[in-house]
Length: 130
Image 1 (spheres, rainbow, N blue to C red):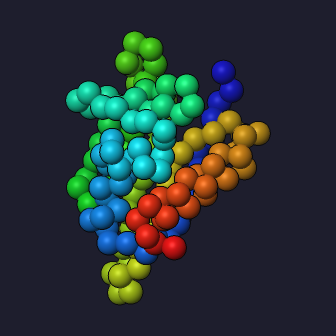
Image 2: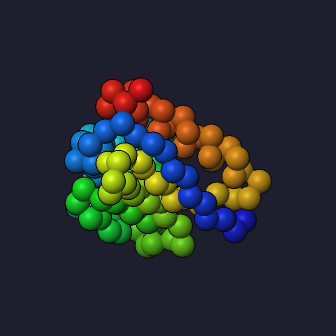
Image 3: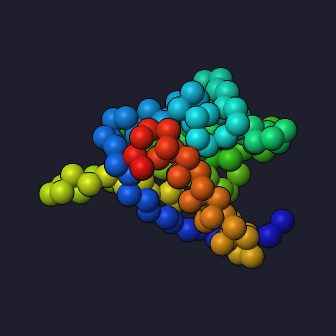
């Protein structure tokens, strides 16, 4: 398996941090923009795209600020990879943005970034932040 590289993307989002957090931390919120279907059992989440299932463990969360999902293997053991969604709010302007931390194989990096841009665009439509 090719090693993956870590990357970060930041997207301005016209939303309150509290509303945005609901869409990045709950199965129903994530299902509206991130995956076709999202199920959770305790700390384990199943993300379904088309007919492909990927499993992750909610590794950490800070209410109103961030969530971090570690991808797990078939035995529910953590892999080396994760994705994190972090809400940033400018102290002065109160502008809100969403920081995405993810991993991709180097020759799929641009494709992965485009996928996030499309997904965040969907998120903005869902919360009325266009």
